[in-house]
Length: 243
Image (cartoon, rainbow, N blue to C red; front, side):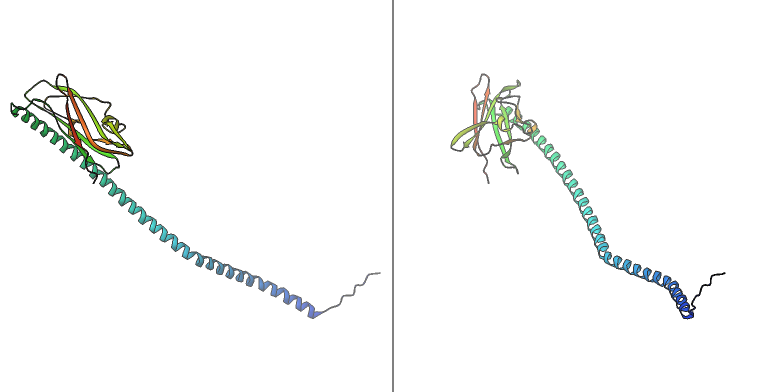
C-alpha cells in the first residue's frame, strides 16, 4: 500500500520568494557599482590630500636646484679667487726678485764708488718687518751689503735676536727659534753668510715668516755680524708699531 504525502500549496509565498530572488540578483550590480563609486571617491580624496604635498616637493626640488647652482657659482668664484691669488703671488715673487737684482747692482756700484775715507767692509743695511693677518705672525727680511772693491767673498756669521718682555722678565729670543715649523725656517744660529757685494736673508729678496710666543712683547731686533779678522758689527732695529 503506497504512502501518501500531503503538501500545502501557497501561491503567494512562492511569488514572494521569486521576487526576493530577483531583487537579490538586481542588487548585486547595484552594490558593485556603489562600491566602485565609493572607491573612486576615496581615491579622489587621497589625491586631493596629496596634491599640496606634491606641490611642496616640487618647490623644494626647485630650491635645491637653485642652491646647487649657487654652489656652482661660488665654487667657480672661489677657483677664480684662488687663481687670482696665485697669479698675485707669482707677480709679487717676480717683483721681489727684480728688486733684489737691482739692490745687488746698486750695492755693487755703491761699494765701488764709495769714498776712500769710508771704512770698507760689511754693512747691515736693514731688517725689514711686516705685519700679517695672523696674530703673532710677522714677515721679515735682512739685507747685508759690502763697501769696497774686494773680489773675494766676504764670509762670516750672524746672531739675530728679538728682544722684549715676557711678563715681568726681559727676554731675548733667537730668530731661529721663532721660525721653527714655518716655511723658510732657520736651522740654527749663528747664521753663516758669504757674498761679494750684496746678500738677503732669506735669499732672492723674499720675505720669510716668524711667529712670536704667546704673551711676548717685542721691542727691538738685534743683529750682530761677525767676520773673521774684523771687529763685530752690531745694529739694533726697533720693532714695528702695532697700529
